[in-house]
Image (cartoon, rainbow, N blue to C red; front, side, top):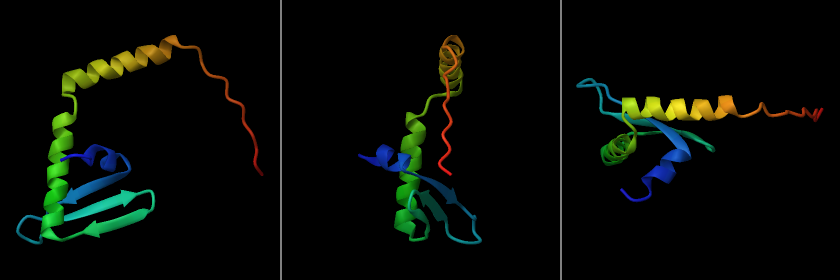
Amino acid sequence: IAGCAPAAMESMFNIMDFGDVAPGVVYVEGLMGFLYIERPQEVERYRQIFEYLRGMALGKEDTIELLGEIRSQYSAAPAPRIAWRSGY
């Protein structure tokens, strides 16, 4: 599934399954708006992308460790100075 990670970073999507009541639908929201995808082959493509991304994700313990490392970097760094500008 080449190129799916960059595409997923520009938008978010939710796969909605309704069991036997109705076919699956994908809701995609991006910078330019949103859309609903209903064609079965396109819904399946999003399922494949989801599984690919899930396979790339860190596990629970690795995620906790990474977040701890990031937190320690921020708590050790001096607080940034913020200059506010009014555009109005």
